[in-house]
Length: 449
Ligand code: IFM
Image (cartoon, rainbow, N blue to C red; front, side, top):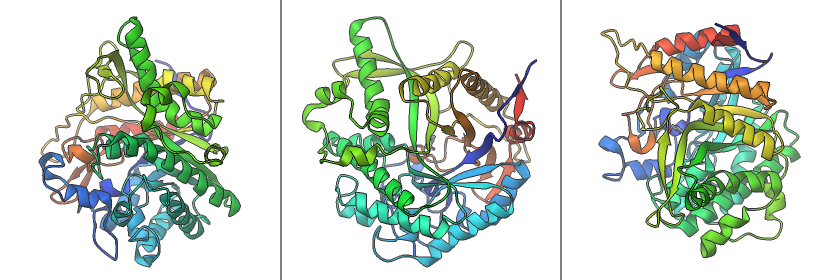
């Protein structure tokens, strides 16, 4: 068994998101978000789940930070609920909301944990949606103002910032397919949203640079590895479309200042309205790219496959099953994603901002979960990341999704991704076997292969 050591100063952490863990959806002056509105509608979420209380992190935050310290986390990635700090999205500020994040940041720093903040993890203020949401260009200025507020209040202590989490998901699940909030099914709105998310990112980056804040600002994207299902030309072309629609749609504007041409020819009149100067704002250099990786898909052509005429099936490497989400497990796909970024987008600094799995956890009578399969999953993905570093990928840190079981969007509370089990009835947190294993990885900055 070989010892796999990571580079010095490699940052190990865990990630979360406001709507998934905070609860307190209408407390202390918080405004309604699109996820509050969406989950309160009948038949949108499995078993009628919602984030009203979820892990109750808003109230149990000191205990949660103590737990992170006990686990030895070096960094904690969390998001800010925009409507908690600016209830209507623009205009009046809710000091009590800001106070919560001030206290969280201070507690983390006291515990020696580096805070890593995401400004937008999908929970847009409902008032902004009422004004047109992401498809309305005005949002790009409202987002930059919100970002500026957070930089000015927390930027003296926080050095890692991301503008958006997985803008593809916000655009396509939120506005294209309608299975996430705000539940709109219109591809023109989805592509306009993608463009405005990028433009809002660029405007927030300008505010960050002009303010002279210390630290790094990036953006977090969802990556999958895609393989054509066969050597058939139609499958290869469909695979290319999916790659462009998921990955190039964001990486090309960010790193090359343009949109993928072939894709835009394909989508025709659904292409977003882009104004002069937008691409220069979007393509300003970022300090890091956040990579979320979960799965690999085989893509095939089908004439019944909607706008992009495709079908996808999960691929698992031999010997691996699927996760509870039905996602294939393929660590080699993870490495392929990292090498693609290195080779085709200028080898930017990367943090793995999410990787993990939901598995059927079976607690014993004390609520303890033995989860060797989660450990195997993580070990194999750490190994892929280690190989990628050896091949020159500029990788500096790794955040597990997620610290504790939480609200998994349309899937409600069924999937459990956490290193820590949450008993939702009592709010009790119980670290799983994988949490202990991860603590050892962090302490040794590596693991036995
Ligand atoms: O829970 C989500 C998270 O909010 C965004 N990335 C994927 C995770 C698992 O589905």
